[in-house]
Length: 146
Image (cartoon, rainbow, N blue to C red; front, side, top):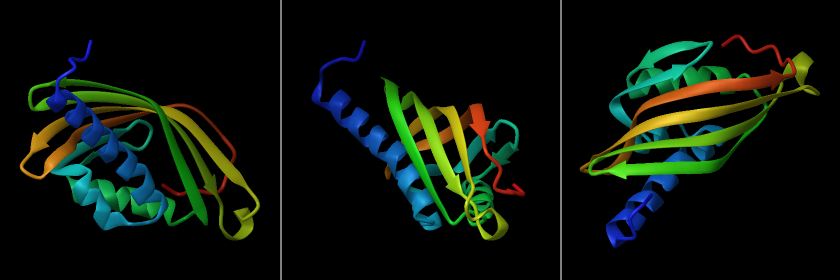
């Protein structure tokens, strides 16, 4: 159970903002904003796609996949955060819509899943050090290569 200290509330709010920034940054193709989400040496396990090491490798993968879409919308919910000093864990549900391009312009791919994160407090604030995306279900085909 979370404590009710001002620091705990502040930590939870900042962590939630980092998680939300990830979704809005990738939907707006603001790849440089991912520097405010991940540590430099972060690792992401996008189950089904592989493990990507380093903030730049993560950003490169995301941009390579999402630039194959006309628009996307990543909705996050049921965010649960546990803080223990300078380390935190968080989970949240994902519902993501991806609209295709070209021959797939009228098609939508929907992904439901869950992000599981380990975050660390840095001099610049909370950052995701490790992220796992578990896809629970997807439907639709928009011809993604990634």
